[in-house]
Image 1 (cartoon, rainbow, N blue to C red):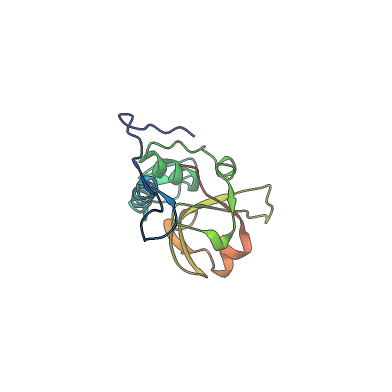
Image 2: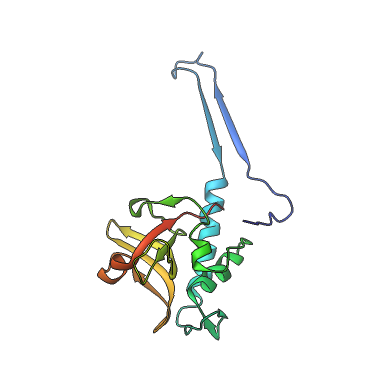
Length: 169
């Protein structure tokens, strides 16, 4: 993964120390960072970019508004935050730690196989919204309907789902 940091800015951390001498309780150290909020902003940028392609027709190898394929949609969307994803869905399936469906968050990548084989990844999408336990929406480039969002827990996608990963950004 390659990411440009833009001017060398680093997340700001605040450290609060408590000596335990006050009546408020025992000694403690509290560390907070704006890193998680900047990651959330980055993921929202990626999702907004992906959604801007909604309705774009499917084109094998496509990465433009003229035509888009599933892995090209994710490469193009993550480029909005200067993250370079591998080009194929199979390579993207190794771009971060595997997570369970119960852990899914916006920005996670979900992978599918038309042959139901974990070794033959044929499709990828990105989680856009988690509304509930069985209500997880992802955006992808469908071969028949182009770029669109679907529920991961619909019977069709559950049948071909292989795995999910969380990109390390």
